[in-house]
Length: 70
Image (spheres, rainbow, N blue to C red):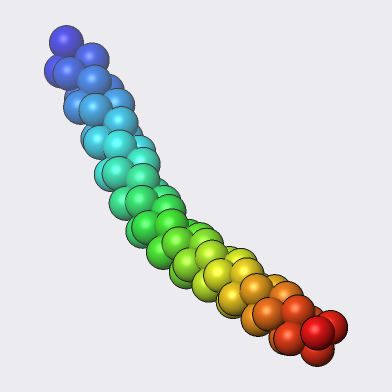
């Protein structure tokens, strides 16, 4: 009986250790996801700025072209 309890205690200790490792891994993954999220948002922001700049330049080129064609 004592041996079975001891074996069960060892098994519980192994499971706890594995759960601790899984918890730490999930925490690290969460940090990675947050980092990726911020980089993606920065890229999207830059993309929208570039698109806006292209629109302004296109409109400006159209105005200049209209002026020169008179």
